[in-house]
Length: 453
Image (cartoon, rainbow, N blue to C red; front, top):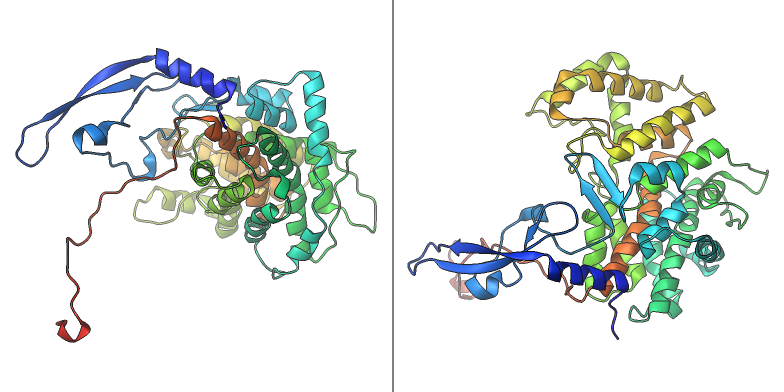
């Protein structure tokens, strides 16, 4: 069945019309002279152009070496654009600052999945679909009982999300557009429910069912903190802050977890399995666990009088200590998401009145010193989104073990959008990176009795 979508067909046509040829001379180390090959140079709508090396190996016998794929485009995408030098993040062309200030998480989810902001009727239908899918199969409640009470919530999420494919057989056919859409809506809707269940299970509290009268972020907070014993009303300032955190974490181009979802999807795996793989990757402390690492770092510093000591350690290349929450692999300028959360962070602290929390006071002092310190200014080590999101989540009472889980709830939208785009791209193949082999050359087996020491 033809999977190519309208947006992907437009991308394909755009690339066909916007390229030139680059002449490359390859000089091998062995005798035989040089080889030459003409490689297409593809131009996107924004950002650097790329060399199309798909035919390089076939025509020259060489392939490229790029650990971490930091200089390799694995796909063509029209979802998210990042310019790290200028501190720009666009979703479908819209600046993240505008979306965070004027939009909602579900509207951004629609934008990422569908390509455009929704009309009123379409958005109402989308919200209704998400709302009606927030419940999970009742048998999943029993599934949680197999985990230890002290299991990390991310460990639970990897298992439970992957297990969804055992409960929802009617949405596993990736070649059926209707089933893909149902699976997508189910994942977006059920992630907060499952995340809240993981938290409640670790606390020994009863699960709280979702409420159809609450918005996405409000419903999530209610499932986290409500109990059957008393009514719970969500503070609108907290609800707004969480909605912004979800928006700011919804997608971030071809990061490790998104690349993992695409790689898993390239094999034809069902969407629940692909997202479970993404969650596993996100669990890494230098990816999704960074905001949790911020709080752990603040605990290690302990007091504002020790900040300069730790800044000195951060400057020392021989010291393994690193200031978490400062700088970014992509952004060489101020993280645009951090600019939004900095203001939100202050609003949350003002609303809750917990300025006397030692950890939060330490965080604000560290931020002030780092923003004025010549070393951080020179190295452009500005506070990033993980720094402020960690402070906000700590302030509203979410334990650090849940920080990455909230990240997974938000990023599911991006994973789904990228997964759907990958399926519709006719140029995509099963992921199969090459390697530069550095092991032993050909050796022949000898019996154990004949082997020398």
